[in-house]
Image 1: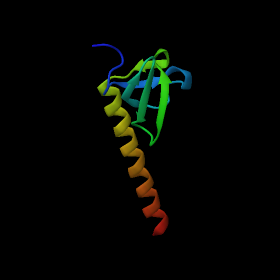
Image 2: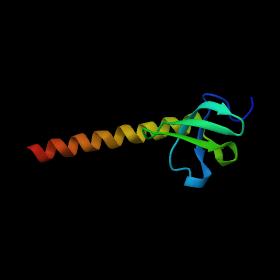
Image 3: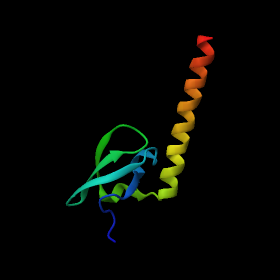
Image 4: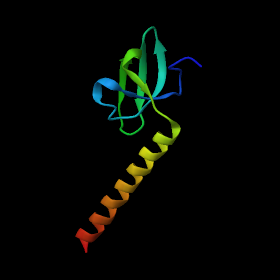
Length: 80
């Protein structure tokens, strides 16, 4: 498997690996990325990418789900 390929999960070194992306396109030395932990699109040079494991993606999604539930619970308490 070459790095990266479509469907690979990555983060960007230049942004401190703060968001997780899925590679959705390749063109030369650049990739097109779709946000997994945020609703966004980006492009990046291949040299800026760090591979992310499926386990890390699952953990990030669980954290987002937990955060959403906390917001719902807090909103319910405020409306009482």
